[in-house]
Length: 164
Image (cartoon, rainbow, N blue to C red; front, side, top):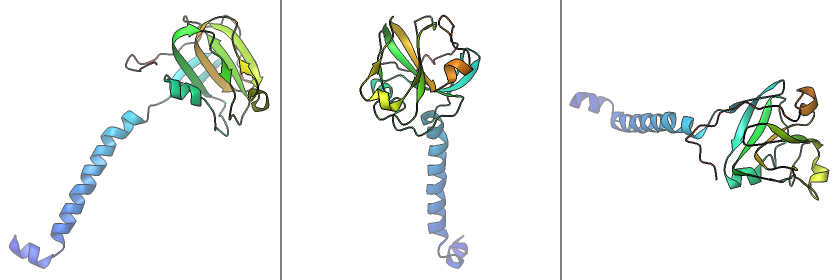
């Protein structure tokens, strides 16, 4: 063994670096999946969407602000701890969206079509009845996926998901 170290003077350094790389890789392989949550499946109207969950105050305030585009099957699902007339303000929005409010039974109670960023700086969109969930979708989705008042959304929120 001593001859091996003499022949390969850098073997010790190679072993240490290899150990560090393996440790880092193992840590990321364990931690990253828990940090990067897969989107929630959301069925609404005739559509199936990949919904990002917004369950914290900060995530709901951020909403889709700064997003430059939305795929036709993308959505933001805001989850609130209680039902209320939650308003949506389009501050810092770059794309027009459709907004759908759902009651505690996941039934559509109010919709806004084609909420554009230019209207959003001075206007808050608000439902007429209390809602527990708000879904933001690409503009035109309400019509193209036949999302009507009274329609029921289907989705599951992990019980471990903390809602603030």
